Amino acid sequence: MQTRSPAAGILASGAPAASAPTVRFGHVGITVADLGRSIAFYGAAFGFELKMRVRRSAPWIGEIIGVPADLEFGHMHLESGMHLELIQYRAPAPLSAEDELTWRHGHQHVCLTVSGIEAWVARALAAGARRVSDTPVVIPEGKNSGSRCCYLRGPDGETIELFEPVAV
Image (cartoon, rainbow, N blue to C red; front, side, top):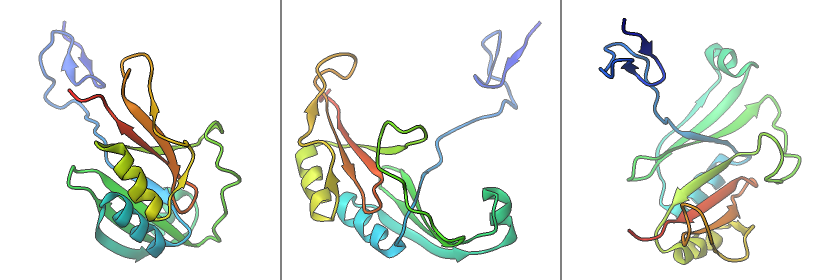
């Protein structure tokens, strides 16, 4: 008897399942206070290119997010294929983040894998980022031993992790 593992997309026998559900990474979405400012920041700091900017207030949006809304989206891409969705709520009235505590449940961050981490930190700071880490930290143990990492804050307090793996 063969059983299918939907999560794995294979039959218990090891054969690929013809109609197994699939999953892949889609995009990172960040709610921002000023879409134009954030588009400029992510372009200048990390080289994201704006692919589309659009405003929507259709009923289907409210059905998805759970409240009637008027939103403006900026869809940005990196050459590597990463897709960043910046969202500015026009309605309902936006709420500010309580704090920027990375240890608060539900806190999220975006990680960008880079080479030449100091140059990327400098570029992000010049574009308006703020430091969380004083300097890139060398990871002393585990599978990422020798890699370097730092946290920055974007224009709306969002956490941006820059990660430079050990060269292979």
